[in-house]
Length: 397
Ligand code: ADP
Image (tube, rainbow, N blue to C red):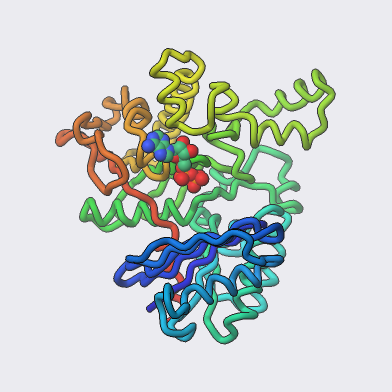
């Protein structure tokens, strides 16, 4: 079964054609600068990547058309015809409280996704445009929506409610939703397979540490708490996002500098996090190298990040009454051994003991805890496209 996975943003579109049964990726790539000048990247398996600038992409329709043309192209194509695409899986950022799992897309589902637009005004409308473009070019092909928020819909009210007047939840749907659900679901399923135990019997803490970062407590295969909130600004400090801060700071700084709320939020989203704190970079590789040369602020940003991750690990072990494994994934989690080591340092009391030699690894599925560590520490590369393809294939059958 071949599944086309589409992740549409406002001016870009990532795609991958893969077979979820064999996990073979037939081709993948990226359309960028949609609506501007159009840049197209296509990498067929086993062949040279194709890069084309100035591809006319006034809308997402032309971008999807370029993807389909490339997939069936006589020279660089990987399938004979579009009929060999059995279904399309679309990443959709926000499913609100309406979607607790992936769904086959119908007119009713489209209307419900649109109703979630106010919750993710930058992302959902772009996801919808991507779906419509595919529907127009591939009528009759089953389409599935896979939501970033769905996996977290199992959280209990005590975890998802904010201590705000109740009416803001009832009337305005203000609550914790959580994000990165597809990644947390994928790595926790892989963790159960690695540990050789049914996921129903496991208490797992999944640390998705990338440019955006979130941590999820997964008890018995269900998300019971997660660090991102109503928006992806909450929780850990990230590349450029501040994570949790005292809301009173907003009023204070806005008064101090005569800023409006948009300017303030731009600072919290794009100028804060490890970049803001280090005055160096949002990229952990740059922090490592600057800290190595004695830059104190870069070292502080690394420490602050690892400290907050550690606090969430402790909090979620408390929330679940224990932990069987801590999982590291995404760009930083998969590659940065120093951060993993800083997070685990001092957690021996709760049975988490990293093995320094085993931790000297990047981007491969591996147990990195010591043999006598009561809780395992696992490095698991995430694969959101595969998870989307698995869900899509199951629903399209
Ligand atoms: P996104 O949230 O954009 O999906 P990723 O999960 O791809 O982000 O993570 C990107 C981040 O991973 C980079 O900004 C960088 O900080 C970090 N990263 C990537 N490679 C390394 C590495 N070798 N060492 C440390 N950090 C790395």
